[in-house]
Length: 320
Image (cartoon, rainbow, N blue to C red; front, side):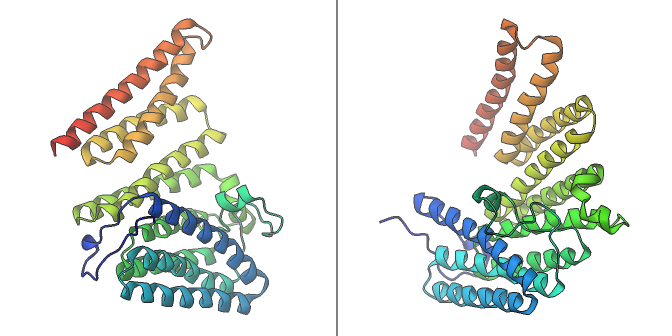
């Protein structure tokens, strides 16, 4: 049998110790896929049938909360936490249905015509003012369920709510309804700036949680901060000068590596290291032909620098 992650009733988040194994990996992956698919279903039902959609989302939230409470009393932390995750992510769709929030980010298709890839990699969302309320409720629900059921994975919907909220607040500065609807495709500068501000907020949140002795909860804001920065750079590269964006990316890669060393958070080292290699290779290509024999070895040298950094971090971890 696969090992099961359990917990006993505790008074603080720091007492909760999830155990990573094949069983938890499969459970996490399956639950997150359920969340993504449920989000599509609940959005479309609420969009087409306002009151019925709100009641359906409410039923999901109440039902999974009951399941989570039952398994919490049985000291089954994994099952309780994952059920709480499904409940927390259903709550904001009650507001979305009642507010009749329209999707404005990603493909606006029905679940029947949506491909599996689109279903798993996009979420129904928009930039109308109503979505700010939806994400505020999503953030509140994630935090409350995290405090009660103590599964660190509940930080994931909180991080997504913060990122979407940043885009929506930035879109609110655009006066035209049509421009707001096409915000991510049109005003790329504001979208990227919002992403960088969100990255800073998530970084500070991660540092705060680390200081509070809650590293498992802090992991997800740190991952969100790194990915929000990458998203902003790719957004800028669509419209602005690639040399300038690559230069900014190279500088940010060094900042990421410094954060990895200072905070001992490997996610910044991974993302910063990859960005350092890619942006460094981009500039090297301008002076060393990509077809020359020396280009591959120069890129290998860049990668060796990143690998050496990894060795330093590993030795630091062993020393502590």
